[in-house]
Image (cartoon, rainbow, N blue to C red; front, side, top):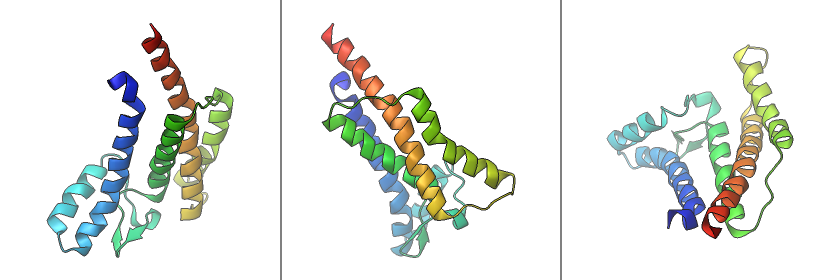
Length: 150
């Protein structure tokens, strides 16, 4: 069963992960600070959660930064696309090219040479999510199909 629905499971977990990041500020809005703190702490393991690099919902900060939210959202969208349609995998060269803007943005920001904006973070996050998922998901789907054919 896992072989047949592996991508659906990945997409489901991406959906839950993205949804959880949006639930945290919603809980703050509902005066459930104790519950939102648990969620923020959980997401703190995967994201820096800097306010200046995040979106806000109902006046509360989303639990992951704008680049992470864009990365996971685009991975989910591509994952759903790959699940519905036969999709060719990106070449490693094209995947690396799509990852370069994010790498350059992070490097310039880390060196203090340029402060990124949320528009840049969203754009680079989407490109990064597309690159990773269009490189990996079709390859994994092909491998699962070959295993199922045996």
